[in-house]
Length: 141
Picture 1 (cartoon, rainbow, N blue to C red):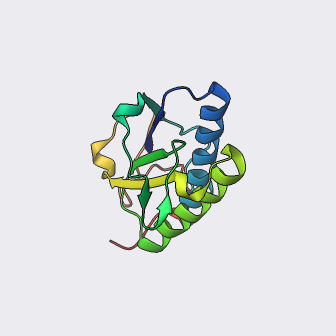
Picture 2 (tube, rainbow, N blue to C red):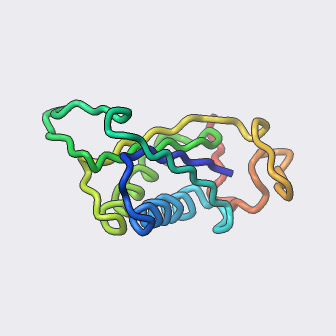
């Protein structure tokens, strides 16, 4: 049950936010194997003075289209996270019209016992939702 927070500057259309949400969810389904109906996205629209980025960072000019995506879910191996980042960036470029310099991604590990939602069933061995595809449940800790 990943939860995702998306931070961006105020003024974006509902369609743009939906495109961002769809891009994120498609990556989570494809890479983490979460069920298609397991979608929890919270948008935080901020005044320009409340979302401050350096005009140039890591040698790249930054734009006001910046989108910060913070995803909360249980531990995944580093290779899985790298695949998620690649897939998510590709989806945001294609579906939301962003550029790589606009995208900031962060994962916060939150173990399965820290989550609750009615109807959710955890596998007692893996501690992951029983609906996650077996080949997507991490074995590395």
